[in-house]
Length: 168
Image (tube, helix red, strand yellow):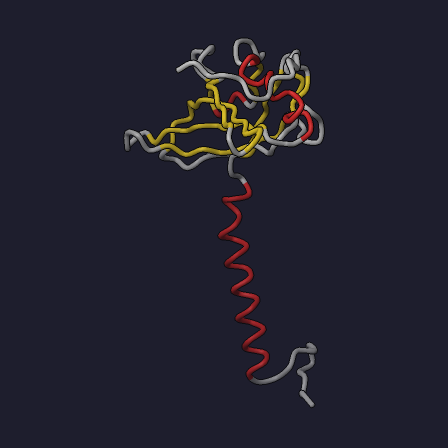
């Protein structure tokens, strides 16, 4: 039987262990606090498909490490099956996108043709995502990428050809 102090806490070594666990928990909580402010995508809503025939708005919040440029690039990535992987730089149409902008609007123009042969697959499975690509201002070539959640894609013209020939 354990003997408790007036505050209900066990006396002796068990009380010390509770204090250590509390301190460890608080330290872990404080260490995680900066991560709570980390960059993250807030839109589009991953529970709804992205319609490539309409304008898409990408939104974000949070912050990035100080060594990274506040200017960044967007790409999209799609892996309809284990044999096919596609990506495209979607921000090359814009001069500059900054962390403080909190949103970016774009339309799928030329890149729709890459996705159309896989319209059925990417409408059925969440295999499409966005990336925010930040570069380190002090180390050339060092980048940090943040990935969105995965989405399904609709609004493509399904040509029925899921094995397109590729010209190299």
